Image (cartoon, rainbow, N blue to C red):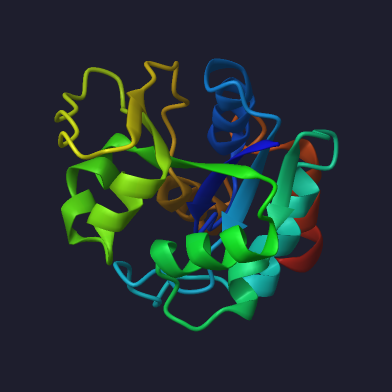
Length: 191
């Protein structure tokens, strides 16, 4: 199978994340997209990060009706912080029959040369980049296995904005899956 790896904090997951996964299935010709909930991103601060179990639960809830989009706790069982190269090496060992495609945003692509083992990732893995609207994407180096830029309609909302709206008790109906809103309210996550 061709599996897209969409890593992130998903703090919390929102409709933009779900739409992006659906779109990537089609444009990158993927069989599945795995939402790799990151327990600890080495490039982000942990201060406003909900517990990993909460973020995984909300991601699973958001994807319940999406059979080809999977919430994944794979990185929870690996050494921390979560370096993409380590995750890819473990996945290759555990799922040798599958092909993995790394899905990253244009903002992450801009700083990709700061990632651990970025040259190894470029040499060995396909990367699907989705830029924000109007964002210029720099060209991949010559030694990259395959870097494809996909112009996709992106949902203009961030998890930071969602957290702010939750604290202010604003309506999330247009931005977050209904099942996730129910869980946010039931458990008072992010309040």
